[in-house]
Image 1 (cartoon, rainbow, N blue to C red):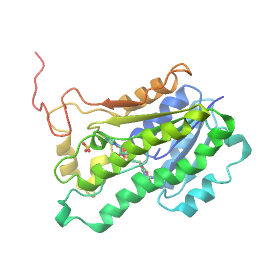
Image 2: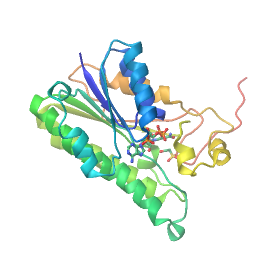
Image 3: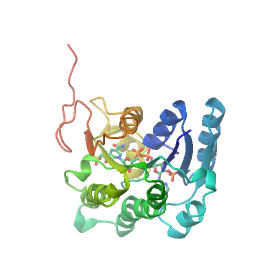
Image 4: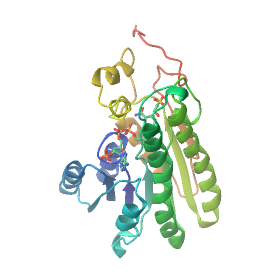
Length: 255
Ligand code: NDP
Ligand code: 8X3
């Protein structure tokens, strides 16, 4: 049986990716900070599908926690075939001159440093086995910038650069690296970005059909199950009604 490690599995893309891989018989290592939610999702998946699930509750921003939970994985959990670096967030949407330093630090520490801490532990396990597939969840914000997106866009541009760099460094070890870069998807993302302002979050998805978490999960699974000699380097996935980070077709009516 294969094993996938998915970060940020308590909501959104991570949860949908966990469900998709569980349905297809992968054992799972799932991470997130919300313990009850993580345990509940893990239990549901291991009860419903004939798989083992190892839930690990920690904050990706804390190196000592990442090392404590992943640095000493039991031997039977060390053969990780798929790593999905998914956990991440946007916090706030201010101009650079009015930016909130704590928001910046949360984004930089999670989206860049957390991804690096985790990869630094898991990549050597893959190198040892000379096989594995790493997914980094980037964003259209890693390809373009938009007004008041400054630091979030910068973190996703960093993920874009790291995905290319990881592909080169891991090339001699037969390890695939794929970046998945979505446009607007309706998850908890905007609720987190707007610090619990549900109305403002809901407005982001009004007037068109956004992506759903399952759309991204289906793509990750498709890419992960291509023949071993095929790697998708990078995929930008948008709602049909979104052409770029800032160009929309809102209010389109089907005829
Ligand atoms: P959600 O808010 O729905 O889920 C985010 C997940 O990340 C949660 O499971 C959360 O778990 C976890 N997480 C956040 N911070 C930490 C942390 N410090 N330590 C551990 N886990 C953490 O958002 P999405 O599913 O939409 O986002 C997933 C990824 O996709 C992110 O990297 C995001 O930037 C990216 N993305 C999202 C898009 C969208 O429009 N939704 C579009 C493009 C990219 P918990 O709170 O339990 O810790
Ligand atoms: C999330 C998509 O356009 O809000 O990464 O940056 S966007």
